[in-house]
Image (tube, rainbow, N blue to C red; front, side, top):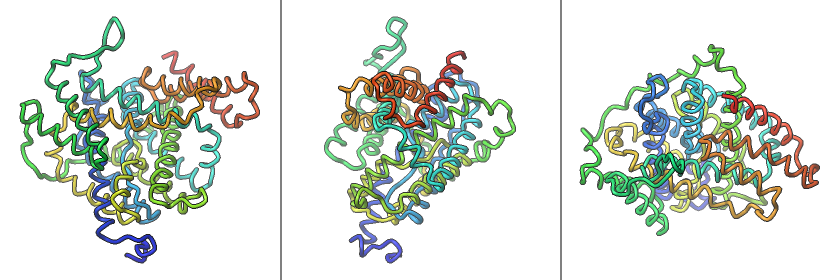
Length: 444
């Protein structure tokens, strides 16, 4: 084991790897609650049961897909990089594809499956690099920032801090409401912990907020601590029914698949490079076994869609484990084992309400917009598409729309600036496809 993971070469040991893997799990364990909450659209009242996924099944799918992703990453790519259903991608799945477009969640799972297969094929054939390289860095950064704003907006709305307003569309909620105050307490705790450099700050803040909620009668006490995992039958394999439904084969669903694919591209490439740099794996601007790491992600997404969850992606919280000493894939295996053990703790996780999960969504949004300073805002031809990309995501509640508007504006502004030759030809193809998409969804 030590020889396979090159413990001696990397200067690590079992204690450091186990501690690193467990630290990563604590830093990202919030997804076990947040993901089922988002995918089941728990904050939406009066939703038909046909559009709402089963909470217990999604919980199991979240834990199992995360474990599979961690195991594959650890064994094949041998990196201390953990995976789980991605924030932002799950919001797109629930709020755009299902709630806004009205597509059955089975169709959304099928779109995740198809995008995962495409991701695998593109990685194996080497086309992935060509597509990623065709998209300018400014748009890649804007996509991440837009998703961050969208996720934070959902968190603020779920917490009741932001509410609907007939006069101004949105406005400040009732700050005297006990559950709103509980959410604000959670936000303050999370910020304090992260500013102080606490590795598992998000998870610990959620736990303290849930306990405070139980003390003040805002959160129900769990009926038990340990139980058998919920049944995954309500979601397992249900995606395959979409392939026999003619309504699945639409231009809108093509745009959904492309959106899953694009965002997964950016998310994985950025996270992989960030964590690899922190661990010292990048040599001469190249990362060994990068292809295997991306293959791990696609396998996890494919298996996750079969179990019943949105796209699985690499987590930047893996940097917490690296900071605790993790240097090999053994740490990822430890994280995967922790996710499997969590399957038996579902009763405890039932105490995590919207007020408890909202701080995690809001703070993750802050982290996702942190790279905006790298955009050259003084270049208007670049600023316009970047601005519209990130702005339109939260305003339209659609990541796909943000991508579409930005990808249409970019070649247009570059041509007007006299820089048509600097635009990769693939971007012109993207612009045409997304223009058609906007014409389609705009007429709905």
